Length: 368
Image (cartoon, rainbow, N blue to C red; front, side, top):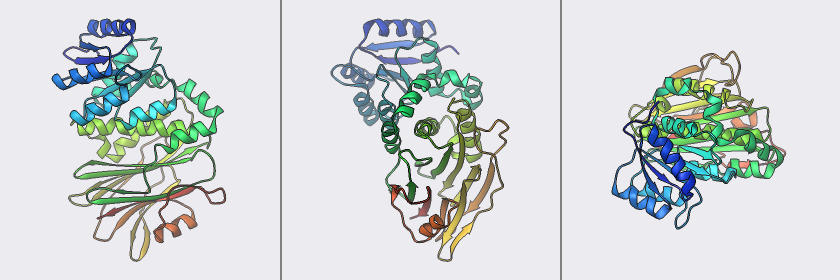
């Protein structure tokens, strides 16, 4: 797993840590270009090509997140690893939202974690990735420390999770995504996400975490980070897994099972190919149903039963392919009669906290 022929931009204001990491990466075959502040890092980024950027969050002149944002505006798509001594979960979310591939927390006691994160960013194939000890590969998130924080503070967990939810209506060039999600507690047991993968593919998924406690907030962060990782690889022309619902659920099962969270996940994942309106659907668990919605109402899509992600004897997810016709809307919903009626009535509110409603909700994809 050497780093031969890789050029790394390492932006870090701590001279001791910077030299330590540089020496290690150099010994592994990488060519490391150093910068001691964000402004210099951005200047170097604009002058030459890099395979990977590693940057501290807290730096003089220009912080890591602001530098990352500026880099993405200049030349997007370069894998980036953020390192920080600040263990706040908000920083994890901000880094992910700015497109960071990985997030490591100081002190980094084993420099192999940095090398491993670089390999993960560059995607040495799904098979290679799954051969890495998953608990070790997730240690950069300081799992136990963050879980302890979230378990002690429901408000912190709620704040972290709510930042991950999209607006109630998302308009892509040829697709509109709408949803309602009802929650009775500080942290939602349900999570949704969507992305335009490229001009020809759109993705959406809906997840449910059990048991329902503050761990669901951290599980939402992990789930989004895993999906975000595959999205970046796809946009860089390295991997098509994010466009393949069956393989995506296999990947997510491996990741979530080895995350240490101890949660079971119901998950329905949909990709629509927009040239021919071809939908591919994969499902694990029984929390959700998929529907086609048109002027006549909701028509359920038949999917075989499958085990939840995270079960010891997990087997392959169920899969379904469907070609959409004009007027069809593709929906995922919890199996609650009031939710289905609200879906029929086009009642889309986004994330809603209502103590007296049944938790759950629905998401709808419409061709515009």
